[in-house]
Image (cartoon, rainbow over all chains, first blue to last red; front, side, top):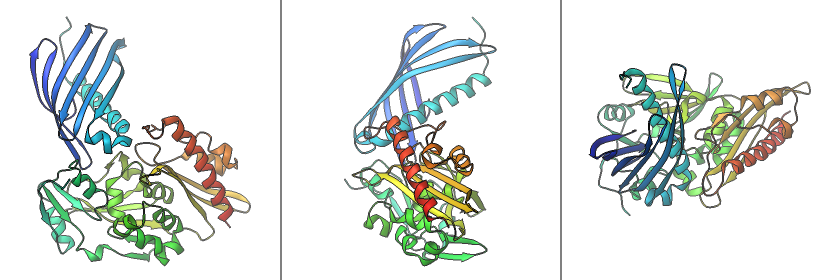
Length: 122
Length: 281
């Protein structure tokens, strides 16, 4: 996750997290949790990320669908990010661009991680 | 709200400023028209701020070697009123005159604005259409980046840690060139919901060169090379701009959806083209 500074498992599929998001001069520290919901391995699962900080709060909810694609995996993402608080009040016009950028960063990191680490097949 | 407490330095020379930027995370303050409001809202909480306001010799507008060179600390007002800019690259003066309001233009700087790289800023459309270059310096480096390679993403530029924008280099336009900037301003902020900067040159009745820079539409300003080619092939403004921004990501917010922005971009691009063509000799 972009800017993730701490991720601690608290229960099955549930993690406590601290995230630091930076965009230009704006830097926000978010405390919250990440939840893996409705898991249907190996096809799909929902990822719910919630965080609150001084500059506002946010909630991201996405359905990730995985399908084999040759030697790799095709990941289809469908979701939305909701933002509230100061950052939403004054930065409304940037929320969409910011959300897309964060999602892009997340998938870039995921791709890098997936292609460099190897996991034994179950 | 008032800003969170921070350390403030105001270097007296460029060398001093660059030395300061070598260490730690320092936020640069130029005109303050973007940074100060963010700090007051506490959306930005830099611990160290370096004010470039004492660097008077970063505010210049000169012409040499076939280019207009504008120092990073030149204000939008300076650029708007400069006889050199108006004579040599009038598109830039036109765009500068449409930024924000008079107060913002009196304090806001070229360097600060382009370094901030707001997706809805006006300059980027002109800079890519003018094929301008940005000179970046640090204590260890001195390099020049093409405008199209400078604006990377929303609020993201090619500036590396320790670097500041030193000057903008604009190739001198041919006096026969026609130019125009059409913008749909947000009614409250004046930011470009969509802004299109156009340059054209005619040669014996046909259009020998067209440059179309679009801002506000996506996360960063871009040149619509497909539309430019259509114009150079003789397609009329309306048809040449029907596909403007195709293939580029489009912003959408409460004020304007992606579709509405596409629609606005088409209209303003066609208008800018028509005006530029009528001005071209």
